[in-house]
Each structure stands twice: as structure tokens, then as C-alpha cells.
Amino acid sequence: MTDIKPDKEYWTDLFQKHPYNEHYLLDSKNEFIKNYEKEISPYYSGGYIRGHMHRAALDMLLYSCEKRNIDQKIKILDVGSGFGDLTVYLSLRGYEVIGLDIAETSKLAGEKLANKFNANCVFVAESIEKTSFPNNYFDYVIGFGSFHHFIKYKGGAQELNRIMKNGAIGYFADPFHENPFYRMFHNKEEMKRAGDEIMTRSKIYDYFSNFKLEIIPVDWFSMFDKLFMYILKDKAEKNREKLRITSKLFYYLDRHLPFKKSSIALFLSGSIVTKIEKK
Figure 1 (cartoon, rainbow, N blue to C red):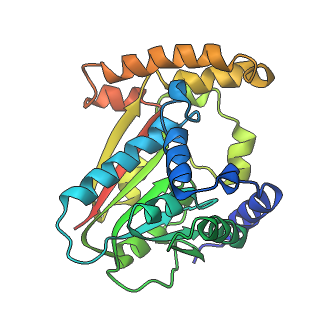
Figure 2 (cartoon, one colour):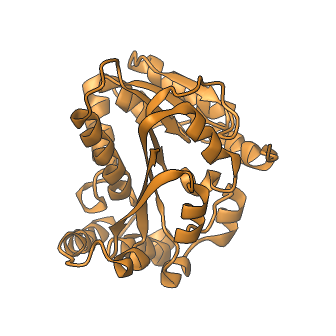
Figure 3 (cartoon, rainbow, N blue to C red):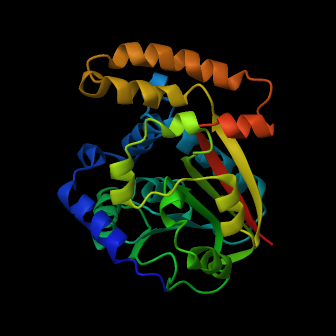
């Protein structure tokens, strides 16, 4: 098994230093659901800078769940569950969800949030390469910004193949790095500390070679939101409203491009949803 100590230490320390989650301050499940859905909306409408990317993956998951005829309760694995927001959200929507993260402090944060809203979900602190789940257990897998961390763990794909049911589907929302312009404004030092990997088509296809795979481009102009935030740095907060105006234009342009399914569109995209299906 790959030595996971560096990643484990980084994320354990991160969640220990930043245990705050604004959702702890909310009073009801409905408030949490409404607030979380706003966070993962496009930036111009009040979401965070990559909210549209995560919303795309979530919408695909929910749409697929509604269409599939599964007799028992749908089981979902949230890979890289972080503070537990997505795990708790899906649980409150009626799904059986487990949040998986390498850091024990992440597990504790998720449990705290779940207890706040009486969400019936479970959090586990384990490596993606070796989990305690039974064979053929999950109907769906989802990850928000986690695939570009665990792609370096070669045993992760094999483990997902083991714990996913035949025909199970996974959706992973991540930044995409084939466009060299997009890589110019990345914080390379922070990427190194966080264990981020440069995501390319060849790496993704190689990693999920035993799955039916589709790489879905999500944005083109919207990646300039992050560029402007990077350029403005400390001044970004003061110019937030102006940035949201330009963001609305970028989002509109993204949704009206005529070439969304071409290889050029994928090369130009700043983020993707990687869809996998167990054969």
C-alpha cells in the first residue's frame, strides 16, 4: 500500500486548525439545505468560486438517482468528505450516505455536523486504497475536489471497483489542467503541500482503465473567476460585487457555447466532472 502519511498529516492538521463550519450556526435542517445549495451555486449568484463545478456533479448524481429503479435505499459514498457538508446534505435528502476521508479530524467534524441536524449518516477515517466496506456495497460514489488528491494512490481505483455494485456510478468534480494558461495562476507550493496532482486526460483514463469512463467539461470562461481572485488577492473581498457581475457574464457565455462536447472544449475547460461506471 502507498505510504499515506504526508497527506494524512496535512489534512489532519488542516481540519484541526480550521474546525469552524458556518453551518453549525444554523438552526434547522431546512436552513442547512438551503444554505448549502446556495454555496454550491454559481459564483455570481452567491456560491463559492467553484460552486458551479460541484453543483454540476451533484445534479448529475441526483438526476441519476431519481431515474434508477433501486428497490432498497440508495447507498452513496462521499470520497474526501472534508467537513461533512455534502454527506450530511445527501443524508437529509433521504439517501444512505457514508463520508470517507483520510483524516480523523475530518471524521470528527462530519460527525459534529451530522449530530447538529440529526442526519443519519456515517463518517469513516480510512485510506481510499484500503477501506472496511463490504464488496459490491455502494450504488453511487461522489467526490467534490477529491479525485485530484487521491489519483496518486494507484490502489484507489481497484478499491472503488471492489466496493461499488455492478452498474454503480461515480461522479468526481475537479479542476482540470490540460490548458496551460489555467496552470499559470495555480499556487504550486500549496498544491504540493496538499498533495494535488495535475489532472490530464491520459492520467484519468489510465487510473480508471477498468471502468466505463466519461470526462465532462464544465466551464470555460468561468475559470476566469479564479484568475481574477488570484490577481486581486487581498483586494478580492472589497471587489466581490464587481467580480460577481463579471462572473454572471462568464457563466452565461459558458452555457451558450456551441462546442461543449468537442475535444477542444475539454482542452479549454477549467474544471470537469469525471463520470465512472463499474462494468
